Length: 68
Image (cartoon, helix red, strand yellow):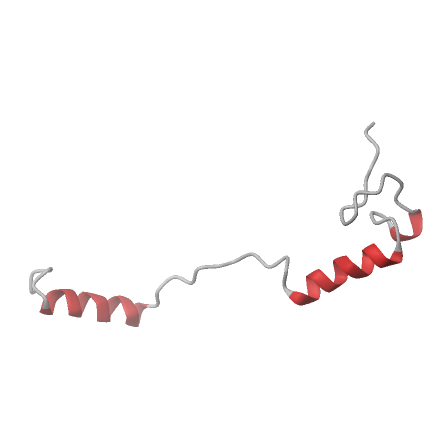
């Protein structure tokens, strides 16, 4: 079984009390990253229906889409 390492500093001996980290410092660094948003997954919001309708109307005005 491979030895576990601290995900912050890569030390090879995590302390059971702070597992999976090797120390309170590394646990606090990880918590700070969570609270600071470093682990956030970037998201792209889909356009809402009003934005879609505005884009369709603009395309029709420019002659890119046929009129209904």
